[in-house]
Length: 130
Image (tube, rainbow, N blue to C red; front, side, top):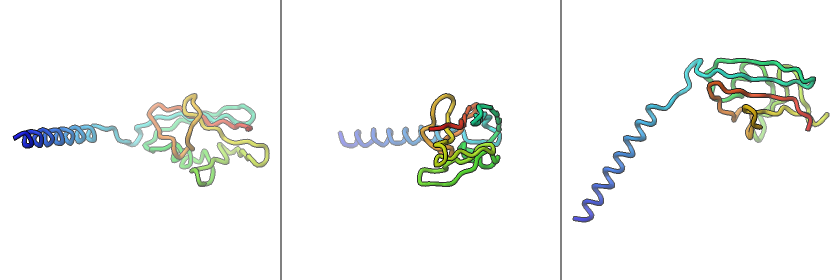
């Protein structure tokens, strides 16, 4: 008798977990066209700034910047390596320069193709000499 009650409780628990998972999956926000308003600020070598604003349904920052022609780069072992932003090239081999990427005020821990976009997100690409 004890085993039947235990199995019945486990079955109810599994059914509740399944129902809660289905509710959670059904209520998640999905990317919709125009659902994310983002701002990308570019700080050039001469410290001038240029601000770009986009409305997008893209999931990652790299997708938007490549599509809009803001960045150029090559795929590498660690993802997209940005070589040029807004027409200005940074070359590590020449003067140890690179494009630093920030999410808000925090230094990004991934490349642009790994930065998940959020509505109202602010991103910064800064010409930096290492």
